[in-house]
Image (tube, rainbow, N blue to C red; front, side, top):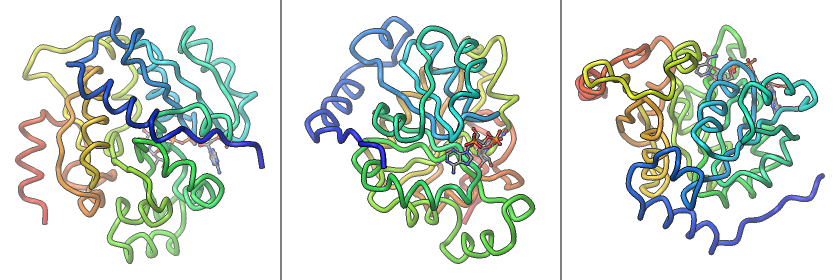
Length: 249
Ligand SMILES: NC(=O)c1ccc[n+]([C@@H]2O[C@H](COP(=O)([O-])OP(=O)(O)OC[C@H]3O[C@@H](n4cnc5c(N)ncnc54)[C@H](OP(=O)(O)O)[C@@H]3O)[C@@H](O)[C@H]2O)c1
C-alpha cells in the first residue's frame, strides 16, 4: 500500500485551534492561516461540486478517485488551488476529508485508510446508501446499524464524522452564485449531524464560508435522516430545517 502521511496530534490541534480562534472565514482568510487542506475521496457529481466550492474559497483541495487521471477537466475548472491524486494521496494530503463515494465503497475505504482517517479532525460523510443503487443487502445492513450516520461510524472506527450535504442534490451546490451569500430569507440550510463537538465546530466553520448555513439536527443517530427522500431532504431555509428537525424522532 502507498505510504500514508500521519498528521501529528499537534498538527491536528493546530488545525482545530486555527479554525476555532478565527471568526467566519473570508476568501482572504482562507488563503492565510485558516486555509485548510481539503481532500475529497470521490470526485464525481457531488465530490466535484463540493471540492470546487472550497478550492474557489481559497483552500488547497485534492480531488481523488481510483482514476485520478480522469480528473483533469475538474481540476482545471476548480482553478489553481485544486489538484488530483489517488485515494492514498488524498488521505495523506487532507486535513479535512470529504467522503463522497457510492456507499459500498465506504467499507473498502475504512479497511484501507481507517486508521489514517481516524487521525483527521474531521471526516465529512456525504455518502448515502441507496437500496436501488447499492442493493437491498447493504441497505438492510445500514438500517440494522441505526441508519447512515451510525453505519459510517462503524465502517470508520474512531473517525471524527459529521454527515453533511447528503440531502440535496449537487445541482443545488453548483452554480454561478455558489460563493455569494444570499440575502437572509433565501439562505439554504445544510442539515448536519455528528457526535464529536470539535468536528461539528470545524464543519460549521467550513460550511459558513459558503453560501449555505449549517443546521445541526443532532448526533450521528439522526444521520439516518440526512438522505434523499427523508422529511429533511431538499432545499429548506435554516428555520424550516430546525422545525422539521424538531419533529424527527
Ligand atoms: N449526486 C448528488 O447530487 C449527491 C448529493 C448528495 C449525496 N450524494 C452521495 O454522494 C456519493 C457520490 O455520489 P455522486 O453522485 O458524486 O457519484 P458519482 O458521480 O458516481 O461519483 C462517485 C465518485 O466516487 C469514486 N469512487 C467510486 N468507488 C470508489 C472507491 N472504491 N474508492 C475511491 N473512489 C471511488 C468515483 O471515481 P472512480 O470510479 O474513478 O473511483 C467517482 O469519483 C453517493 O454516496 C451519493 O449518494 C450525491
